[in-house]
Each structure stands twice: as structure tokens, then as C-alpha cells.
Amino acid sequence: MASDVRDGHAGACDTDAPLTAAGWRPGRDAGVAALQAVLTTVAVGQGTLFPAAERALREFHGLRIAPAPHGGREVAATGCVVDPREARFASPQLDRLAADLGVRLFPLGRTEADAPLAVDEEGRLLMLGPGGPWLLGTTPHDGLTALADGRVRARLRPPRWRFPLPGLSDGDGDGEGAGLGAAVRAAIVAVYVLHTTGVYSTRALRLRATTLRGVGVVALDEEFPLGPGPLESSADPLTAAMTERLTATGVRAGSCALVLTLPVPPTVTGPRSTVGCAITAGGPAHEATLTLSAGMSASLGPAAETLNACARAFAEWSGAPV
Image 1 (cartoon, rainbow, N blue to C red):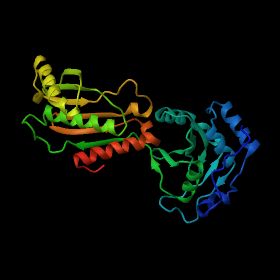
Image 2 (cartoon, rainbow, N blue to C red):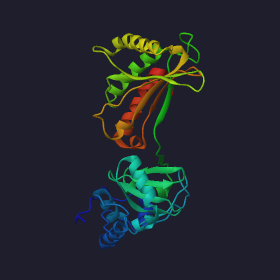
Image 3 (cartoon, rainbow, N blue to C red):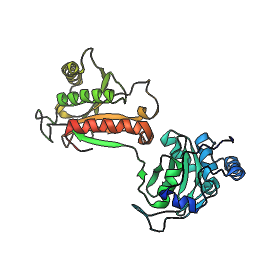
């Protein structure tokens, strides 16, 4: 373990009361006790230590933090013990969460309700509690004080939003559902929004058409490249090309459920590669919606901020709340 402790706290403040009562102080270093706990934890296959976890354990290992006596400011105040060995039975769950988030986790301890605590590579404190994973704080210090003080925490889940296509309600359009043309125009807007918000830049649309009669048969599942020049100039040629291909398969746009998706470029990696955008038109309910979704890894950090900006842009375009 490194010999220096990186202390980001200039001094204790009122919100530190649960920590100071447990024996914490700025610059605290649990030293050998923290090292022994880490070695035991790693020896039984509980993860690989990384710098953020090392700093957290050196500063907080061994603390038994009691919940604030006022019972909780926004949610129930919860006490905890900081010792990675206390989360030794949660390794499979933490491994699955790490895979979902796309980031390494190391156990930090458990709450008085037996919910495992873990720190990730960015130094964020997470809890596997009721209803799944929760973000307690962007640093272990903030997360532990929020837990003991009963401050609201953020539930982590795969992001998903649905927006109506503006100007189109169920059954409106060309008399055959929302209409392929409206779906293509919405997809062009989506291409622009994903590019300008920094999610990714795609140069194609994928059309999947499923017949409405019987069990439903996929009549077409094909990718159509965007043309050169301004995005808006691609709408009519794309609509014409898709209509031609549907006709060649023996179906009409109005007799199908249509889903236009924006393919993720192969160069995109990490959380943004999980972002999906789909425009649905037609179908039994004559749907006309745009769906923005992503994996769990996009629920944290810069990826979450970028995705939220994208959702706000779609909300402004559609006139629907985020």
C-alpha cells in the first residue's frame, strides 16, 4: 500500500458528526489493520485492490458508524461498519454489478441492514440495498455521511425514456398509422441530437418491418445509409428507398409495425456503446414514439450527464417532460 494518504477534507464540519463520533478525523490512516483486511479479502477472491479503494480503506477501515439520532433528514438514517471482510458473502452480487457498470468494485463493508457497500474505481460509494444498487456519494466520505445522516441516495438502473413524436397522436398521420415518412424524419432528428450531445455519430438507419396480420412476420430488416450533405436532405430519399424495399417484399408501410434504430458505430466503446435510440411507428396501437435507452454503465459519471443532455434535447423537441 502507498505511504501517503490523500486527504480531501480540510477539516471536519457539522455533517461529519457521525464519522467523528465513530473515530474518524481528517488525515486518518488505519494502516496495518486496513492492510490485513485487504489481504484477507483478496485471498478469498473478493476482488482486486485499486487506488480509490485503497485510499477509502486506509481512511475509514474499522469505523462503526451509528445512524444520526434525528432518524434521517430525507430517508431513514442507517449505520454501517467499514471492513471489506464484512461483505465477503456478497462477492457474486458485486461481481455482477461491476459487470453491469463496466467498472471494478471493491467491498468496503456493510450497513446495519446487511446491505453490502463497495467503492468503484472513481471513488464512488455504492450500496446493494433494497431494490438493487444505489449511489450513496461521489466519494466514500460523502457516501458514508449521507448514509448515516439519512440523505437521499440515487438508485442506479438502466436509463430509459419514451417521447411521443411531435404533431402525431395515435392514429394520426397518413391514415396507415404514424407513417414511415414521419418515422424517418424523427430518426433524422435523433441522429442530429445524438451527434450534437456527444453520444455518438451514426451514418445509417436500420428499418425492421413486421407484418400486423397473424403472428407477425419480419418482412424487412435492413440498414440504409444516410446520404451526403445536410441531414434534412436525407429524409425524402431514405423514405423513398425504404418504401421501395418494402414494396419489393410485397408489403406496405401501413400494414406493418415499423421500428427505425440508429446503429452504434463500431468505434464507440464503453457506456456510450450501450445507448440505443429507436423510433416506433404503426403497430396494433398505431404507436408513434421515440425511445432512448442505455445499459446500467451509462447511469454514472460523464456518460450519465451526456445521456441526460440527450434526453433533455428530445424532451424539448417532443414537448414532453423528461
